[in-house]
Amino acid sequence: MLSFKVYSEIWDVNRRLAELDLEEGNLIRPVQRGLAAWASCTANHPPIAAGVWAWAETVCALREELVPDRWERSNEANLPLTINPGKALAICVNTGDEDTGLKVGAPCTGSSKGPRTRKAVLENLGQSVMFVDEVLPDPATLNKGGRVVWILLIYRDRKAREVRCELSRPISINSQGYVDGWAERIILSRTPFDEDFVSLTDDGNGPQTPEIDLDIKKRA
Image (cartoon, helix red, strand yellow):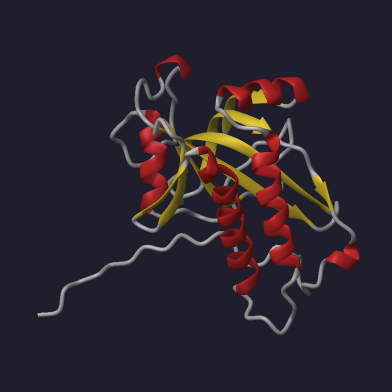
């Protein structure tokens, strides 16, 4: 697991986001809306509800932030992406692990990803390989001219009573399907919450971000 570049100082974060035609609020507000959806679930909800609802509301809020600025919705093979006007940058939402949002962390996705996320990682690499466990290319050679997929990575830390998040560009996925290497990591502001805000009974994270693949066959 590694990262080529980490942006953590507020001026550096804002500068890099501006280069992507984004503001931090465009990302923090959806994360906070997802937090509210997650916290609204109780022990009476199905166990899967908190994770799915939080993810869905974050995706929805991200699109509500960006679509008025001519970004587009895309659901490529059930992978929800939000794509900028020039179609050079796409954002998807995923749950991360406890290193998410930490400058010195080495985060990975909280669950293994399916073929659609793997394809997105390979787009960033500009390579036709399935898994990347060995030597990564020099960052200057990554994805020249192609669409770049970024992940809005989110972790709800109940012990620290905060949500940490980052916008990061994935370039490595291991043989177990976890995204674990990043060309760039943009560390975003944390959102604190009180224990009273949390109504879940377990560790507070619930099931991880889903990735749905449908195999549809025509009836004979």
